Image (tube, rainbow, N blue to C red; front, side, top):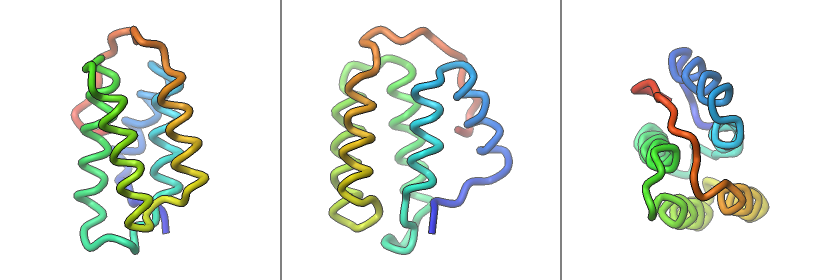
Length: 108
């Protein structure tokens, strides 16, 4: 079962995809690939991923590695399969080092 997102979060993801297509698409695909039945609190996992994506968009230097590490942890928990983790990791590492600054809504 995919990670649940509210209508407001869905709209925010669509705005993110328009303003920064690679990260917006990744966030949407990540929510769809996430198996929420493998964790006690999928909402907490969503908040962690949301925060990491926000850090990535804001250009924090360690954001890529933090996100990759969380992908690997989520794989160990069974929330993401190995193919998804490999795909997401590749996509994250291919992002440009300097991303354009974008204004993000509070909920993505």
